[in-house]
Length: 95
Image 1 (cartoon, rainbow, N blue to C red):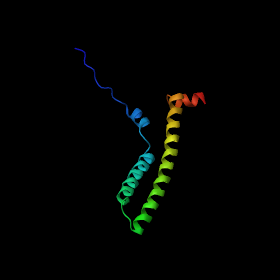
Image 2 (cartoon, one colour):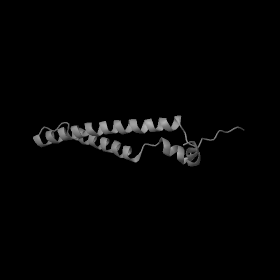
Image 3 (cartoon, rainbow, N blue to C red):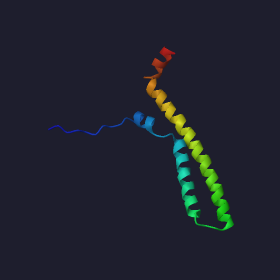
């Protein structure tokens, strides 16, 4: 009987594909801001409107920062895929 076992990812492979902690935290902040914005959407008093405008601005800034960090992270992953280093001794030998 031929049974197929699910492939296990090594911890190094899993780490390589996971978002960096800073980017994960930024994503969480973005979600929090989106929730706060939604909660203020139907409010019409001046304080809520000002708060909504500040949150909207903060969200835009966080989204831009997340896009920049995501691009840097993805480019780094692409670089590692194109130029893998087996270990530091081989890297030192080549360089």
